[in-house]
Image 1: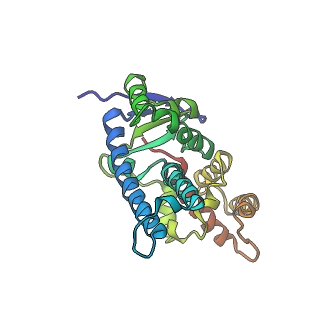
Image 2 (image 1 turned 135 degrees about the vertical axis):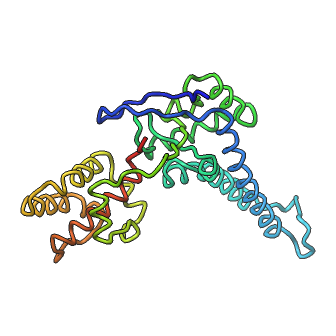
Length: 267
C-alpha cells in the first residue's frame, strides 16, 4: 500500500520525508485525550459539588458562590487548553493520545515545535472546535493536502507519523564514545524547562561539537570544550569552576544526548 508522504527541507538543507497524520489517526488521538480530560473534568465537578454543599450535602443554587464558580471555570479552561499546550511543548510534540497513536507535532522545517508555534496552534483550537466537536478542524484536515487544521496552518506546524525503525541502526562513532564513557542522558542534572531555553543556534553548536569531537587533536578539543562551556553553561545555570576538561566534555556530550532527542529527527 502506498503511503502518502510530504517533503520538508530543513534550514540545514537536508530533505526529509514525512508521512502526514490523516483524519483517522488524529481523531483517534483526540478521542483518547478527550477521555482523559473528561475524567479530570468530572473529578473537578465532584470536588466543586462538595465544596459548595451545605451541611446536608445538598447544593444550594441560590447561594452559589460566584467567586468559586469563576475559579472553577478558569480552572476548567486552563486544564483543557493547557493539557495540549504543555504536553506538546514539553513532550516532544505529543499528547497521551498522539503518543499512543505514534504521531507528533513538528515544525514545517522538520524541527521540534517551538513555544510560540505550540501556543498559536492550541489557541486556534477555539476556532477549530466550531461549531461543535472540532467539526471545522476535521473538515480542514480532510481537505488540506498535508492534513492540517487551521491551527497548524497559522502556527506553521504539521502532524506526522513517527517512523518505525527497521532493523538495528548502526551505532555512530560519537555514540560509541559516549557509551564507552558510561554516560547516560539521565545523568544530566538540568531541568526540562531550562533545556527549553536553548534554541536552534545552541543545538547546532552542540551538534557540530559532537560531530568533530573524535576528529580533533586533544589540545584543540580542550579549547573547543572550554569555549562551548563558556557559552552554554551560564544559560543553563551550571557552574564550570574547578571542572576538568574531561568533566566539561562529559557534560557537553550529555547535553548533546538531551538536545538530540529534542531537535534531531531521524528518518
